[in-house]
Length: 414
Ligand code: 5CA
Ligand code: ZN
Image: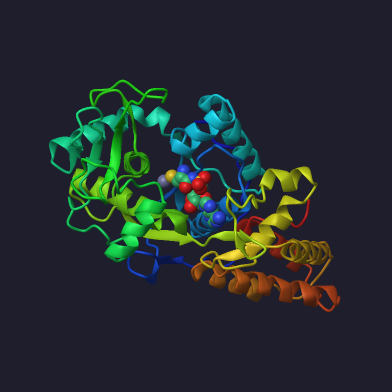
């Protein structure tokens, strides 16, 4: 699939800091240790609706991971998927009497525009489930042969399921207990009640065609893939095993990332699938979870249409720590706008206080599990001093402009 346009990332003077990130599997903040090229996979959108601020916050968090690795001299092989065939897409298309392909293309195009407006660095590869069908079919076939997958005991619809006990490691990524897994599996797209499965927790790999549903002919029988196998296959194909970071929102900790890892590990016998499993917190609105059922989604495209500066949206979302569940409020946006205006004014001065130490702290805070609240406070402190017109360092405004652009993705000068 076509990805989106990139922005230039200025080199930031000074010494880079190696990035430490929280890893869900071990429950610890651990150093990332990429080679010359860092590999990152972040779960992409299901394009049946516009990008809301929750999606944006998650992609911004991983944008910072990208920027810190670039700063440390790594190349980054970033892969993202688009779930361009799944139940929500089919249901929305039916509801609106739309074509699911057209709906997916339209919302993906809007997503690209939103990401560009937010100056999110594009993945090297943006890959749809539909275009990955041959690889998915091949992997599901292999899982059937090696015994990790089986056909449901249902003559009419012998769907293919993954035996979650296949690797003997199931649960290592989320660390959830059996009860929590059972609850979340049911809530997040699983089908625990489906008759004919070996175990309620087993996840769908291939759904045989039902009347009126899109399907693909294959050696598995005509049908369509389950959700987790899509990301498992795309990530492993492009990044190999033990890539550096598997990312997404915390709603994907279980079952999605647990199964994506288990599918790949059952296929190859290699462990781990990813070295870090990193998850962003959920964004709500005015203290309530943002959800379609509540109708309280704030879309990036809506804010753009209302003339809101996307840089202020970026500042507002980075004002909280990426792992914290948090709320978007009108006040948060107003504060972000004021903060950005102060920073821009300070960056436009001819001179300011020396900025080397501020840049050092900015890097240290970001490298410490993306501590953006502390990083933004460091910029505030410099800008505050600069605006008292006390500083005389003529290089400082330019240095701060480069650092805030390179590390935080925000342009202070046009
Ligand atoms: N296509 C799948 C992933 S393979 C999916 O979850 N799509 S999504 O459109 O529902 O979400 C896209 C990304 O945004 C995922 O990484 C998801 O974890 C994240 N996300 C969804 N809702 C929120 C939210 N309220 N706050 C933060 N991140 C969110
Ligand atoms: Zn995914």
